[in-house]
Image (cartoon, rainbow, N blue to C red; front, side):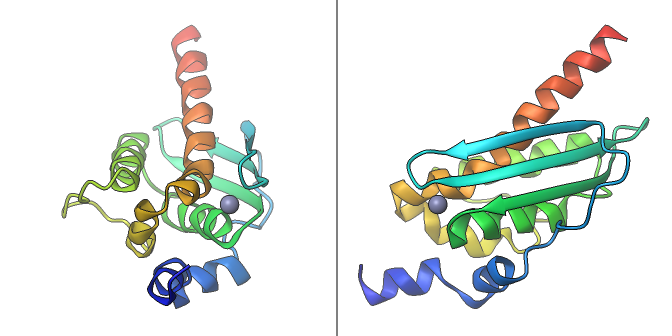
Length: 151
Ligand code: ZN
């Protein structure tokens, strides 16, 4: 790997999230849980979420095991999303998936530290690492949507 590439992948913010992942605290009364696995890299994530009556993420726990990119991405997700409405969460998630395909992020969205992962889209094998937590969250939201519709 070129030195520039390493600088893109291992910026200070990314390493800080990797060393001190947010979202480790136990999620109280969480109602949805999913595990995600990225066989290409061996990354794992165990995510628990509580979504309240007005469709806001009240609390979440994101336990990651794996490479710096996967752990940092899960940590940024855990830092950014609690307190946000599901509509907003979907906007951020959609924009992040697009960013990983090389599309620019719209300005009006609050990304927290996610923009530091933008350079990852140059490395196809690492995109799956960055998206693992977000794919897992998507599955949780699909289940939540179904459960809501059945009530
Ligand atoms: Zn990985």
